[in-house]
Length: 620
Image (cartoon, rainbow, N blue to C red; front, side, top):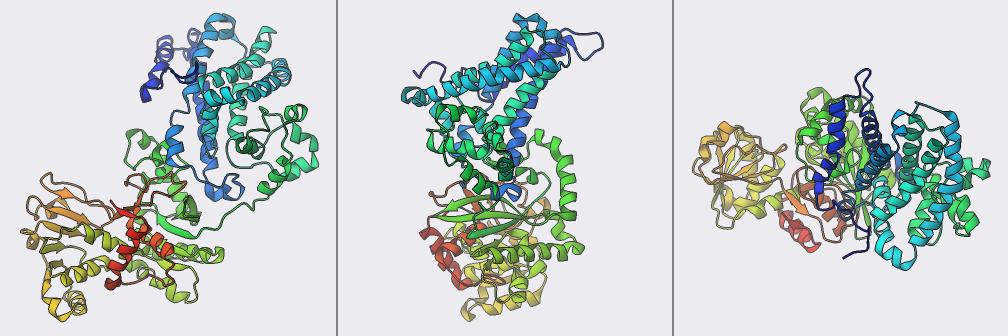
């Protein structure tokens, strides 16, 4: 058994722990305190509102700390938050349940708390005084005690196990620590109430300010300008900063205070580097230059909510549409309109691989924009500006995702390479590896395939590769000219294996379909039972038929030594990225110095595939 008060009694309940709020919610509904003249149960309503606001405070600080396009230059710990930390902190809000129960118990023991006035300024002064003379020194002393070997090992080490602090890390601790915090936070309120100066406004303000400051200290973003402390030196002892607290997390032997460094000064535990590091971080020069950039775009309005700075619990899992997320659809739609009008490409997430920084940038355009003729120039402008920005930064490889490399949009990236022939950043489309992944899925005994999207970049490469393997390819296309052009690229002895067809019925006896163009249920019905649909179409086709199987979009799993990866790419599993993303990674790891744009070099498909496997990327 673990040490007493080192684990939560409801830790095995999972999401069912929220049922513990049930009695209070039932009390609120039954007593209807919002009705005029009804006072019974009003304290329950206040508690529920207060604890909802506390959760919102942590969420808003988390969102701010992960808006990398705003805060990347002021981040303190440069590493990313990985899936291990996310899973570990998944139930960061356990303390809210505990303190809500304690609040309810206090209201029942002290009935006077149920009829407090809205505001009393003198109560604020009493609470402030008690915070300085009681809360700060008591927390400082107990915090130092928690760093003694036995207590640290059994209690406080859990809080320090999170490598990169986030606002949720502030809540990630053992019950004993949160009971201490409850006393530290509650005594000033209790003192003001016992003095007859308590108020609802004081309780709301004190508790939310307490959470606000704790979240700020764990945000991993320095928000205070150093000039403020330079012009007002006394302030550096009255309010801590995120950088100040980060030194405690790194060294564990200094900066123990709650919010006021004054007590570290008095206790002789103030780190001498505190203000020097704060000046360095607050200067806004703490940005790293990436070696690799994957330039993505948003698929649809719902998937735009999958970015890390919205909900960590959403972005850290494979994308799927969840009913409660639909409530945010109107806000996401309005955001889309605003970004369409004024936004530019921005940084969303990053990870490290073998000492090199990889970033994911997003073009602020949604999937449907790419099919609007009048939006083409604007999209290409956004992509071009991202490439030029990468050039200025010194990025080595930039890989274009999905629709950003559309043939009709920019010729698979050739537009930018031809316009800027002296680019040092290598622009790649990653389609060579995408083709390799699709081809690796086709069983060796297959002698015939039915191919839609046959004259696209990927369709052409797949057809030419398979015909060289003596596999008969039924290429669905109405353009005889484009078909014949591709057929002439094949070796003379292999050209007979490429066959033009113009109707889906031509694939009715073929159980291997490779789909590069979206097909409806009616068109899928042309395939025989037992057909497997390989696909490279965006968005993926809908799995209409139960007597057939459907492959996922081409993807690969990143090597095991990837660090700081905490976001899933769209519908894929953790640690898995789209093949065009993986293609850019391979390009960087191999140190290739050529652009990979335009048509796919069929001769390089096997080369790229072997390079991917060599570097530890594995097919899904």
